[in-house]
Image (cartoon, rainbow, N blue to C red):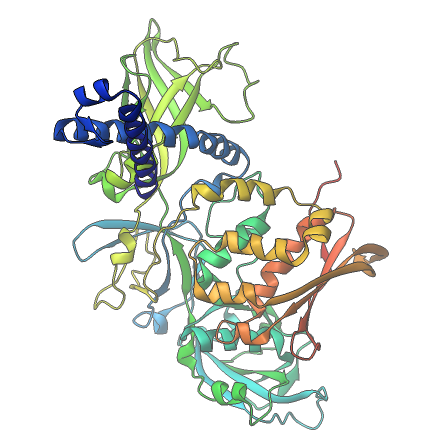
Length: 611
């Protein structure tokens, strides 16, 4: 509406200027219209001029917005996530305190499990899990930071390791010790205020150099590798549904700026610990040796405040996405398009994320026949259905979305020539994926009962919201051309655009316009690249591979309170888009203050297809 007002004021000003010129050149005709000395004294004529200016403004805006139909259709085919809303998200924890002592096995609830919740006003919201939800008897009984580490003399300690973070893990189940627990990994959520959470992430993945486990009998064992790894970067760990045509690195950028809490998870690789456990065993301690953490440093003082409450098991991110049917449409050919709404009440509490399937049920001589429609803007026009085909076209009215939410979408059933479909009367059935708009943001964590209800709960454990759900966001239509421009990635764009291109692209993905994200983007001070060669091993064989080393300089002060590790990992995945499959990128991060190396990522295979 703000844009329409701008058009209206421009049209009204132009109309008044034209009226003044007309009255000056043709006084007789101007006086009949009430125009004297360029001013209009007739209030009825004045209202008519204003109404005409509003009508002209709407037409002018529609003409200017015609580019938006092109960009929306183009993005809808190749990168549909940019024209869809970013649904609300939250962190959920299963409270197993009442059942943990009687557990006899670990229970894993797979991803996409559906949950429901009710706002204080009684309106229902639905969520689906993004990660597997683990219900296990494992608990952290103690977390301690040691300013100095003293392993037994028989164990070799790296010279750079000066301190340690000790984590005591125990099984609360009376009949299931650590030796009987079968897990591929044990996932923990860092539950702390944002600055401490960022500090913990950076310590775990930038300062841990070695790991030991101490068993009940006091025996220390050196582990071959550090048994922790970050979560949220792999293709199967995304919150949003994956688009077949989009690279996961684009989705990773979207989720970093839109769903930062999902990166506060990390995995303990349980088989690495269980390999050394002997029955019976109810408790062990994992010692993580730290480098670069002096006893009198700010990091050490903050780590000294850690307790087991900062690491929560049995958690998962959830996202406000669910399946729903649309209101059936009676195809009677009395209109060129039809309203597209979820079959739910109130309609304003629902938003359509995607149209999944459109079918028409038509009566025929041999009973009912089912005809499926395909999206008009797609790559499937050559698939059967005769020369004309059956397609659907969805249009969104942005003005209607503001004034009448839930009634802003309309669907047209057309043939290949974009003409109304020539078929008999039918009932059209539509399957949708929906969101609840901003309704989840009204939920309040911390109720006495369960905050959410799992549709198929294996043990009835209460589900708690650890964080208030985020608000729904949407990429601005004004950003569509810039989104399309940055998607044509290649080595030349990185080489020629350099730092400014990278910062502009990251700002484009900052959909929430967060001050923290803006400070991080501004903290990128230099970007360089050069040719590199490394020996890469694969299935016991090695080869010398040519690639690109990307050297990124960051201002460490810009990441104070928000952490650097996750930001660097997201960029590491993104730079893999610039080289082909038989090459690699390697990201090295340098300090803006003194030029020292902060992070050196492992070589990453390229993502571009050669053919």
